[in-house]
Amino acid sequence: MKNTNTYISLITAIMYSIYSYFFLDMFPKLDDVFIVILTVITISTAIKTFFDILRGNKSLGDFEEQKYIFSLGALAVIWISIQSIIDKF
Image (cartoon, rainbow, N blue to C red; front, side, top):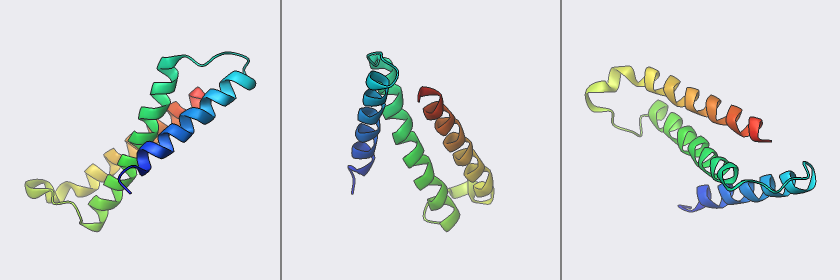
């Protein structure tokens, strides 16, 4: 289960490479592939963080009363990462 993020990001990078090569008629740049990999890992980590904060699985210590602000921050990271993936495709 630990490697799920890695497998999902690599599959997405392969899909991006295939899409770029066959449908856009260009070989994908290495930096674009790495951006896709890191963005997918960021999305899955932000989703896990979002739900852990709301369920109370994460101890926030002195910042416990600000858990909704942290949740909104996680949602913002998810939103921006999804926009980045959409821009690549």
